[in-house]
Length: 436
Length: 143
Image 1 (cartoon, chains in turn cyan, brown):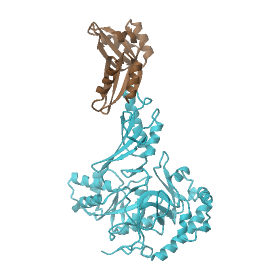
Image 2: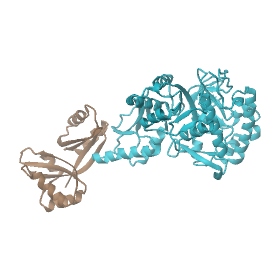
Image 3: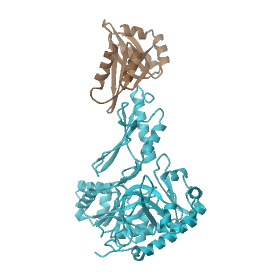
Image 4: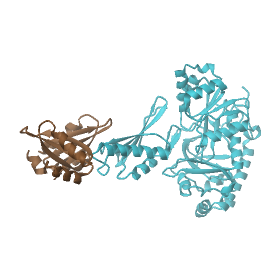
């Protein structure tokens, strides 16, 4: 199988050359961010770092980390480096409490993003001849539109089908001849079920390759998806704070790992407790610095994703470092049907509902291919009523507010006091029973 | 005029009702009347007992969520149309019944109706106007 590159020169550049590009871009970025964004300047001043102190790539470690809280504290546009009239698009993802995390893009950022996304598509073997079925959600979530622009940039045909209505999706796949599928892995399994119920044989379709991401999935799930959809399943990585989809992508040649588009996104892996950078190959928390973004660059962003970096040369010829499949999180974030959910957001809703002293627990299950979330709330005296109607209205209210805030439908169950287990006085907030 | 009722939150799981009743028995608390309202996920046990404060304390100690609500106890003759006439009086006063339950006293001559209305004060006035017998807490406990 011949390897398809989007930008062969940069994707196969010897690492010395790549590192010199990275350093130049990093120096430029740090100087610009220091000059234009007060919160960054403040943090750097506190750490006693000036832009001139960045003389080598290793000096990156002198810079303070950026965490999700920093984004929340500067909500909505406080970390943008350009005036809003230069921002052509915003996206948002859920924050750890009530406020979402907002990111912005200039015209050039959209072009950069389209470029890395086109690279990702090529990495998975897609070409301008493909009919690409984009079942990532369109909207504030970066998945749908991010992939969309990349597909157009590649010159392939995009079917902007978005998520949901599985039967219609199968009909479209059949009638339009979709060759590449983009979706969350769990939605891909959903589509497989829909095919089964419609009596559609996946072998009769034209699907060749799938690009799946936005939620954790295992090798077992990959095998299942490949078998049920009759395609090659590849892994894509991205997050809105860094760009969106297209930060890293698995190639067809490697047996493991996703190539990080390092000329745009500089990765580090740190010990989540000490913040120390770990030697190559060791597992820890992934940290990203964007090298080319204009509207919303980010320095040393702690993704909370646990992975390791593979620097060994890859069979595909790309010199770009690979990251292992994400194996977990350093925080308590859950991904439910592709949506990021923090227990603190659920708590935020519960505190807001009058009288609730929140002893709660979130129970996540996978029924069929669908994630389900149940929120159990202990009924305290302040919450209790002797009228069924009052209690039912309250559970409905909690359910509605969680749906409004997170976009995830959950079931709210009232339970007796002390039924939720506590360890060392602290309740265990999440029970995740999903087997991926 | 108002009678205090104990309400207890119940998850739908086996043995909870037995636990409550045995807790009350151990503490020599006598149940005068009781009803269970249930949904698919939970239930509410409503009790009229002789020692309200004691009942609340011991149930709380045993980890139950307990609330005290005021209800109205109306005594009517245990014969056809007894309840219907009370409800008619309530309807005419444009009062809603949130819930109700009933028991027949020991002599078997009278029935006691326990009501929770949306407008409790107005309900008392309406019932008194039509000369219904409203029982006090002490009377209920001595029945």
